[in-house]
Image (cartoon, rainbow, N blue to C red; front, side, top):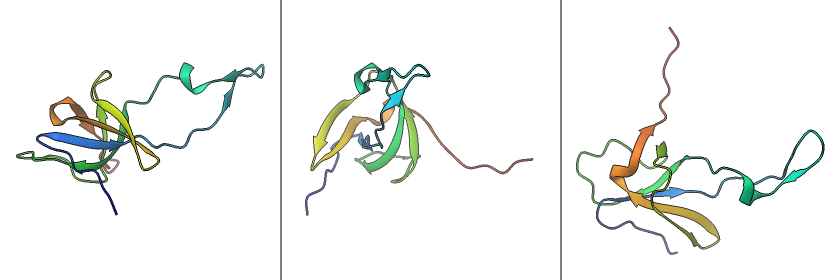
Length: 95
């Protein structure tokens, strides 16, 4: 089995989200190319990063024009520098 391993201080995010066709109320189909991409994705792998604040499986938000998208074994990934991560989604208790 092959897997991607990020080098240096890079992180790999999984962009293989479920794609579904969307329609407007009047029935116009909105193509994938016209939709704005989400700026969050789950972490798949972490490179050599000191004091890492994330782990594999965390969902993180990243800078809009950051990283390199690639396809590997049928899945879409984004490789970007650790420094381009903005936030991670955490569960908290309601007060």
